[in-house]
Amino acid sequence: MSTYRWSCGACGLGNEAQSSVCSECGCPSNASTEGIEKHKDPKGFEKKKAKEGYSQKLFYLFVIPIYIVIFAFNGKQESLIFLIIVVSVLVYKNLSLFKFIWSDRWAKNTTIGICFSNAVVFLIRLFLIPNNSDYVWWFTLFFMTFLTAQYFYFFKSKKGINFFIRFYNETSNTC
Ligand SMILES: [Zn+2]
Image 1 (cartoon, rainbow, N blue to C red):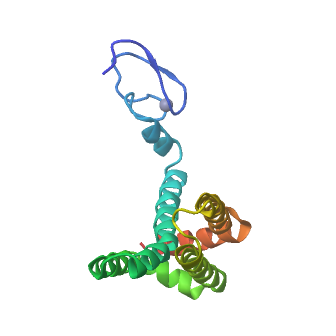
Image 2 (tube, protein in one colour):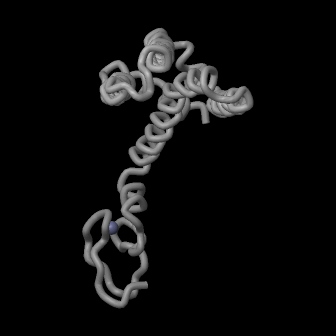
């Protein structure tokens, strides 16, 4: 409980010090920024959270081929096995997402394309650019740009946004 008058973070109404929730909209006085956002627009908040999780999981998926390449050629076999287990768990835990990607032509082709090109780019790095060469720096710069482009294409392009909306509507209706 506050000891002074406070204004509601969600609707802006001034409330008495004794009240711990807003008399207008019911938002608690001690709500966090996230809590206020959730209170204002529960559906929008849920969607935003879902999208964050979605981007994160897919980004892991996109960079996994790089680790496979590195481990396969430079690392120990045990690490490769460990990686395969991690990938299996990731896929298994997000089966509905991966199934949905597989059922969508754009998402499937783009995902395969991204994973494949990341693997190829890293094979080039391993075989054609020596570790002590000046090109390593250029490669890193190129690769960061390449990853950023992938990110924007898959998550921010019109097709990418439409795909997420389809996925979100599908999964939020079933549960
Ligand atoms: Zn309020």
